[in-house]
Image (cartoon, rainbow, N blue to C red; front, side):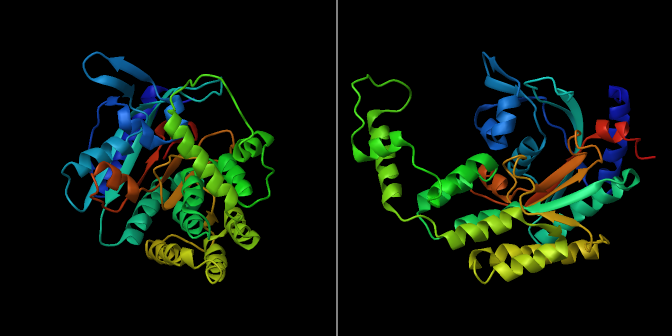
Length: 358
């Protein structure tokens, strides 16, 4: 395993490449306010953040990631367009012995630009591919936006679609909800009794929900039970997308063929086509570039479009680099003001472990 000095030196070389690509150096505090920021990372990071209580500043956390504080700083008054680069340590708890580090370096590159999101996607990916070319890594791409569009286009209750969209990044929970809303999962007897009004209890109310909140939840469950299941044909189309793994051109053709039956994905598929053209213009060979529609679903929850990873041959290692588009995050941190944004990080320690950049 690379020493901290090796990782820092490798990170400095990566940072120099980012700065040479036109980025401005940005630094963020190691100690970050938790509060609402922690919720933006998603379930995995929330569970692994080092959180502490400060008597003056309230709940604080050791920096688990750079993107959120960089976006927060940019939305507070950054230029448009803007490119940022950074290098520093992030901190994440490990719940069991996995061999993974609790603290490690990240070198990152972020682009905020309104004029051509596809070109920005391609710029970031091509830069990462060029920097990492000595390592012969396997790149994988995906698009969370296509999954979100397909889910939002389902012909069912808005509450069902909202629940599915909340759990895009939790595949097991998403699957369970889709099976339930599609009518293929059995209804638990306790829920049947509850909906029928035969489940009685004299126990006192405990927990955080008020009686009114419980009544509202029960009304929502009854509305759901009274609504017909999502059509099997629609579930099959969504499953088709979820399982899609192919080269980028093959995936694009397949998704275009599905668009007639699922018109809600047409804009997202058009964005994919423009991205592939932009990648080709950047010199990326898209003919063999791999696309997995479910890629990124267990990563950070602020990604809402293009996602990518660079993987080593060792499946036990985390991605050497990863990134994606996070337009909605800029809206959340910009108090309604939004700017298209994309970026990613490289883990210098893993790069050093794999032999370095030469």
